[in-house]
View: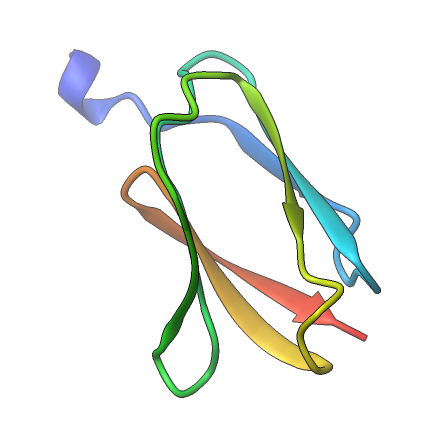
Length: 79
C-alpha cells in the first residue's frame, strides 16, 4: 500500500564539512529540520517541494546532527 512505501533517500556527503545534499528518488521533500545533539532545532525549512535540497551546516560546530526529512530521521556527522 502507499502507506507502507518508504521514501528512498540519499544524504551525501556524510560525514560532511559544510553542505549536505538530500536527494529523494520519488517523493518530494516538503520539510527538513536539523537538530543538534541537545535536541534543539537549528534549521527549519518548509515548503521545499523538490526532490533535491542542500542544507548548509558550515556555521555549526563539528558533531552529530539529526536531519528530519518529512517524517523520517537521519544521522549526519559534521567533521
